[in-house]
Amino acid sequence: MILFEKATACKRTHRSFTVFLLLFTSGILLAQTKSIDEFIREADEYQTSNQLAKAAAVMTEAMTHYPNEVAAHAYCGFYTGMMAGETQEQDYMEAGRLAMESFQMLDRAISMDSSFVQTWLFRGIMGVNVPEFMGYLDQGIGDLSRVLRSSQKSPQNLSGDERIIAYGHLATGYERKGQSAEARTALESIIKLAPESQAAEQAKARIKRLEF
Figure 1 (cartoon, rainbow, N blue to C red):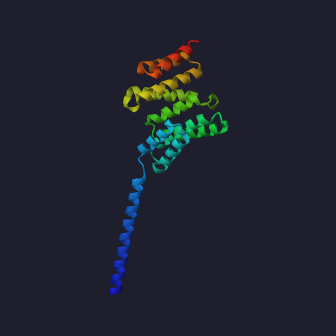
Figure 2: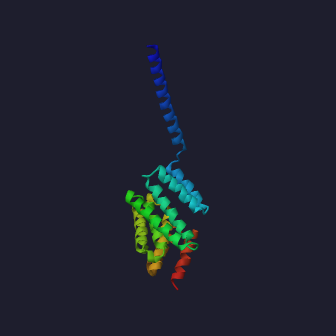
Figure 3: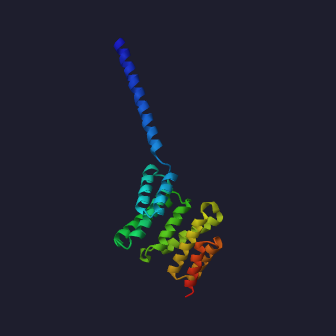
């Protein structure tokens, strides 16, 4: 009887220790896992310092922790696309592979949640900047136009800087299509949005080049 009671007590102690260990380990893991916003901020810091591979790596890690978070896929896709642009002069084939991987990630993000405006912005920027033979120019113009229409209805979805970026790349898309009037309209929108900014001065210079 005494042996039985001791054995039962040991089992209870072991069970309690196991539960404690699981809770303790879970607590450590939760404490170590960054929020999706923290991942995005860290990646942005790497991108700002031209460390695109590290920015993409951070967002790849974010996807493992937040596989259903559209922002993780969108930002990872965008940084991967930026790496393609950076790699183009050194390794054209690798740049093409990265560009296709970027579009796949961005397409996946849109299929996950089409209301996340930044995904359309990122895919639009990619579409108007990759080589025309890849066939994304019209899609890029459409994506950027969609983003800007959305921002007119819901201004909170896009920051002022993001609007300027969208108009600038939209102008690039129209220029590549040979549609100078539409490009000029997009550039004039930048001047209206931020008349005293460096972006406005750059837009004015681009408008002058369109006249020749």
